[in-house]
Length: 211
Ligand SMILES: [Zn+2]
Image (cartoon, rainbow, N blue to C red):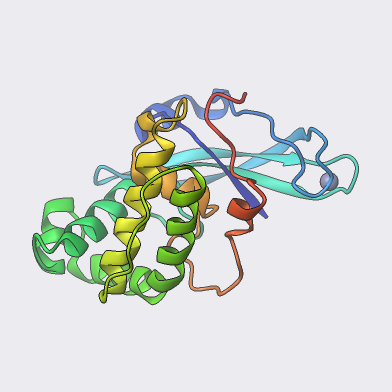
């Protein structure tokens, strides 16, 4: 299992720190007791057209024995690319500024890669629109009216939720795609129909500055 923490560092800054990145210590989502740090692993992430190797610490709950990977908010589960380039492509396409081909060129990624992101995001856009609209309302933000285009609806809802969250300490610096990544547990593009949005209902997402 994994948890996403609201990391404000750039990919390069995070990578350069190696194992020395200070990660906030969360509570076990099941037992609500503080976990302990428990090894970790290395993985790759591609941000700003460059691939970097980063360390992902693991935490373990002494009470139930379950361990969690602590993913920084720029990492998407089972994806090489960081949240920002993925979000930039999706945002441009949803905004109608251009098609996937030009959005891919602007982000410096292959067309087929960008097309895959847009397809995956669109496949779960309806669910994302509903969840982020609910979160925006819960945070006291604007009520997002559903639009016929699910992709636009989802991006608008993420924007509204982020705008509402940006009034709370810490979130504004992260930007809307890291915010979206943190709220969905890194599964913004995940095909699985399991419900990462338990994080919203139970307020399981970790606010910045809670370390
Ligand atoms: Zn536990």
